[in-house]
Amino acid sequence: MKIEIRDEENWKVAGEIELRGTEKDGSQAACCLEYNMDYAEEKTKYQQTRGAFAFSCLFDVDFAFKETKKWPSFLLDLFPQGAALKYVVDHYRIADQPENYWKIINTAKLSPPGNVRISLPEEEPPRKHPGFDREEVIEKGPDFLEYMVACGAPISGTTGAAGAAPKFLLREDFSGKFHGEGVLTDSLTKNCWLVKYPRGDRKEKINRDILKAEKPWLDIAELVGLKTYKSLDWDKDCLFVPRFDRVPLSGGIQYLGMESFYSLVDSTHFGSRFRHKTYTDALYLYSDSKEEDLVEYLLRDIMNIALANNDNHGRNQSVLKNKNKVFLSPVYDFAPMKFDPEGIVRNTRWSENEENFLDEAALLYQKNYEIDSSLIKHQLEELWHKFLKIDLKGYDFEHDLITKLQKEIQTLDQKISRFIGNHQ
Ligand SMILES: Nc1ncnc2c1ncn2[C@@H]1O[C@H](COP(=O)(O)OP(=O)(O)O)[C@@H](O)[C@H]1O
Ligand SMILES: [Mg+2]
Image 1 (cartoon, rainbow, N blue to C red):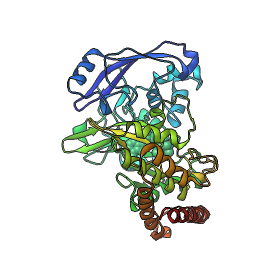
Image 2 (tube, rainbow, N blue to C red):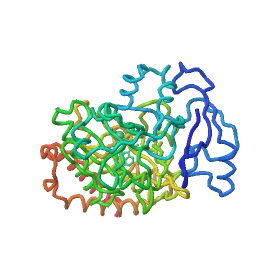
Image 3 (spheres, rainbow, N blue to C red):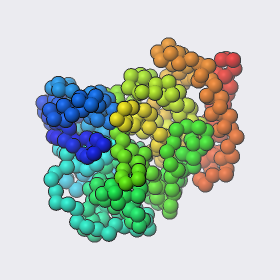
Image 4 (cartoon, protein in one colour):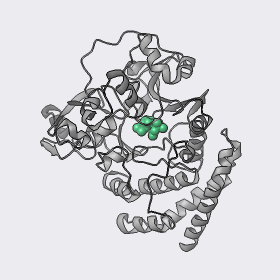
């Protein structure tokens, strides 16, 4: 299987992965991978062997032939999930079983978030299509893909983003029409979007309310000083998320690398759970702004608790990568998932009961990453002060969510006061 990387110029075949083990072992099957000679020569010549030009933080560009005991973890970032996986199961009639994972990954010939993809087949250029109005995108909801197919629209790239909610990666042209990612050329693209629809039953109010809350949730994240990208648009049950890995610049699009924390920690089991330490260790190892990113990571998780975002797993956190640097991505998928009808429990924790999680985190940061607790205290004080000043009722979301949040916020407030008091 050939793997492409988008560098500053183009998508290039950067290397190959082959299965060594048997397909029946799913993502636990041994593999081998290597970068192509030409690619490795070019990148080593300019000392561009990591960051956005590598497959993953785990595999710097070099000339070595690499054997792995299981799939390279970055392949799971390219694997169809949620609504996209359902599409593969229905459309290609491949059951979602480990023995079919290799076949399934081989269907993922589109451009997912980030700048690494499985090589696309040499195709005729996509048929010209005028694109879709914003209203059409909104109204068609989860049926939009079928609709696009029925209209003869080229669909490459439309389902490449993982996660449970039905969603499309779309591009908007300068006349406001929407096209599939990979269809519209960069120079004709005004904005790149991830468009999300409510998960589960669309008519179930809570699914809609949770998705709708993503916009105010992110606005609050910005207000308290977390790293965010552009504000989201909520439009008739449909969430328009501006993509931070495809940045419109004058005359083109900058492609950033993006790698999930699952990939960074070499996880090849879907839906794994880890302690925060596993992720912070990886951030310490790979980030080029260690202190800044680690403190941000902790503050983010405090806001996860405050705002009931229990779904803090390793695919809802990523690093971005440019040609020189690896750094924590802006906040995304930030929503009151605790209230999801599927009953989502807090995924990643500092310890089992987290009674004293702030002290535990501060100790970890001091001992393992040389980050002083006075720095944490100072930034936490600032964040919490800003948060308590926010009038949550002033935001457009279902206000019974606020009532449900109150207890969590009070308990957290006590923990924060105690922590700050202990570190005077
Ligand atoms: N603003 C964004 N820019 C680029 N990629 C994003 C952005 N938000 C999410 N993603 C990518 O899309 C995937 C799915 O989006 P997410 O919001 O997590 O959906 P879900 O609620 O279904 O989990 C994420 O895992 C991430 O890889
Ligand atoms: Mg997600």
